[in-house]
Amino acid sequence: MSLPEPGARRRPPGPTRRETVDGIARELSEHGIETPRPEAERLVASVLGIPRGELALEGGTRLDAAQARAVARAVARRVVREPLQHIEGTAEFRGLVLVSDRRALIPRPETEELVDRIAAWLDGAPAARALDVGVGSGALGLSLLAEGLAERVVGLDVSPGALEQARENAARAGVAGRLDLRLCGPEIWPAVEGEAPFDLVVSNPPYVASGDIARLEPEVRDHEPRAALDGGPDGLEVIRRLVAGAADVLHPGGGLLVEIGPDQETAVRRLLEAGGRWSDIAIERDLAGRPRFAIARAGRRRRPAV
Image 1 (cartoon, rainbow, N blue to C red):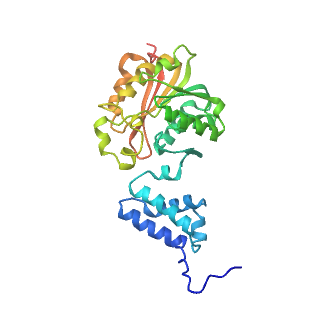
Image 2 (cartoon, one colour):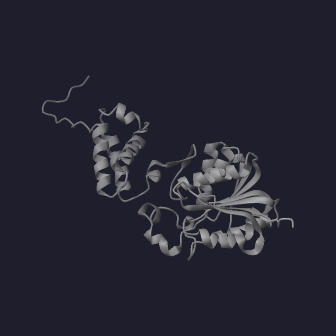
C-alpha cells in the first residue's frame, strides 16, 4: 500500500448525503421551488441511483467527488426550472414508469383520473379497440392496455418525437405488440379512415388557449412541447375536431372520454349537444372539484315513449 508523500495535501472529504439534501433544499427554496425538501431528496437519490428512503438510513455517507459534481449538475438544471421528471429521466403514471423528456408532455394526475372515468364507463367490459388521440408519452393508452381496459389501442400524434417516446414506453411496459402508433395530421381522422369502428375514443388533447401559454409555470411553458399544450385561440381547436369526428369512427354506443380545461365546461357541453350526434353527455369533476372530463356516447339520445 502506498502512502501519501510527506507534505502532500489531502483532498477534503465530500459532504454527507444529509448535508447535501439540506443544502439543495435551501437552494431550491431560494429559487421559488414550492416543495424544496422532497425535490432535493429525489434529485440526490436519482443521481446516486438509490431509493429515496435510503437517504435517511444512510444520511452520514459521504459523496465522492464524481457524485458531488453530478448532483451539482442536476441542481443547476432544476434551479432554471427544468422539470424534475426530465432531470430524473422518468415519470410515474398509475404504476407505470415512463421515459420522460422534451418529446412529450409529462403525464398529469388529472389524466390518471381520466383512466378511472374510462374504467367506470366500461363497467367491466373491456374495449376491443380504443383510439388514443394525442398519445404523447403513451401514458393513457398504455394504462388502458396494462390495466385490462382495452385489448388493443391505436395511438395518434402529430409529433414524431412523441411517437418515438411512446414506442419506448410501450416496450418498457411489455405491451408494444398491442399498441399501434401512427403519425397524424391536424385533422386527425384520415389516419384511421376506412378502418373498423372503435369502441372508445379517448384523449388528453391540447386545451390551453394560445394567449395563456405565456402565463404557465416555467416548467411547462419553457420545457414541454408547445404542440401538446396549444389548443388554439380559445383552447378548443382540437376538442372541436374530436367532437365533430369521433362519432364517425365509433361503434354506435361507443364512448368519447376527453380531458378538458376547467374553464371549458359550458363550451364543451354546447359542442356535444349541437347536432344531436351524442347522448349521455356528462362533464365530470376532478378530485379538486374542477370540471375536467367530458364524456359522451355515440348515437342520438332516444326519446321516451309517449
